[in-house]
Length: 196
Image (cartoon, rainbow, N blue to C red; front, side, top):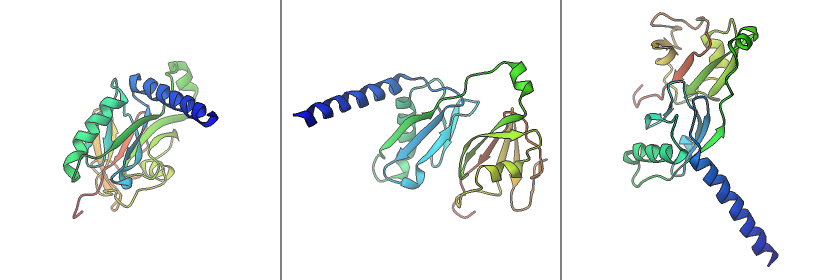
């Protein structure tokens, strides 16, 4: 009888936690945990970018900001379905909330700057970079590229501009590995194509 009561209360707590998350509207800067039961290699954390989207292998960009985890899960499931024999089981949860905004005076006094790294990188997410942190240093700080990384097509997104960087030749469209990052920069390491 005691085990039945404990089981009931545990189920109630889990249900209320799931209900609380399902009504939460995702914000820019939140980190989502995404799991695909049919392919554990797809399991990862995804940072909601300043434009409100997340990037996910085989699905591309998916709108996330201002939406619930159920809506994002549904979009990911629909985008991934053509890649599987049957509809995949996708689970999405909020892993970490975005940091609250700070005043511009507090930002000026900080010695570190926030930059973001996502895609085929060992530890995607937000990095605290100093004023002189370069593109290569940020990639190293994030743990390096995964074996699925398209190292010839790394993107540095700065505002509305996208700069391409080739890790193998240390060059690209106007940038090199020694390019100094600025606050808000997003480094995107796309997934390698089949014969790349």
